[in-house]
Image 1 (cartoon, rainbow, N blue to C red):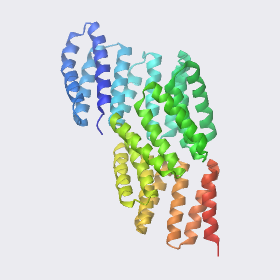
Image 2: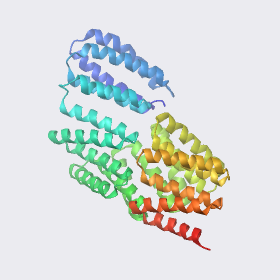
Image 3: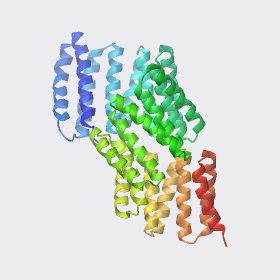
Image 4: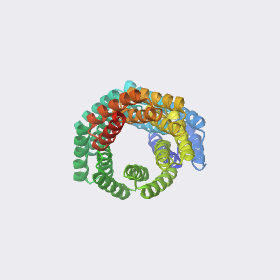
Length: 409
């Protein structure tokens, strides 16, 4: 769970800039305490791997020193909180990030509106990552209100994209489409490729859920073009892995394999642990579809390990679902059932109907293999109901055909 080299480079640059501001305020003692820590961070930035406990200790020493000298300078304190909070978030230290963000909101009543809005948005990102949808929506809504007061169109569009993502995860696809289109309209008007790329990406994912592959690929390609224009490495890696998933759904295996290869290369270059976990879990599914059971289990287990470290319940649920499918193929029935049950429990806790529908379907197939048709039908009907709510027509057709086969004499 280390920061990537890019993360550290960005962190050092931002802290240097902030230290320069402190220097201009004549805070010589602060500079004398902080400069050695910056030098240590710069040294570690050139090192392939960095112990996150060491970095956390250095950051805490640095922030304590700076807070002692910044006094009532709310703007600088707010910028410092954002730098440290984002660093913790990238390290997977979510509770530490939340602590810093909340501290700054509570202790700095004079915090500039734009910085307060950004802090609330970052809290929304963490809540969303942890599948705390109601908390995320509350933070995003508070942030949106402040950005609207400031007239910051780009930030408003960014919030729309994040609210759309949450709506999609909760199965509110119409609301998600509406919000992404609002963001896209703003992004095109102000000429912001990142906003447009995020909106197209979200619309592509929704089209995939609804089995509209052609529309999905069109949006993914539009998103990739926007991210390339912005030279946004993380976004490009994300789009290639999303394209790979779409090609898997279309059973275009060669194209999927090529996209996974590019996605992995870009993600490793960027060094984002979260994205790597997602690529691992999706590559596991890809390999399972090709009946490469051993490698599929390896990647699913790797993904599970990363998701557990990040305390990502939805990711853990996805990895469990895959391990349930793998155990089914190996005829390890009790293991398969246990994985599926854990997956359902976590998806239910995350309020993720898409994941629940998929897991119920896979559990139904496991019961069919065991000739337990009553149990199979119970699972399949639950899957059918959830997919119907999501209007996932292709999935509905697949589930209903499986139900018909179970009921056939």
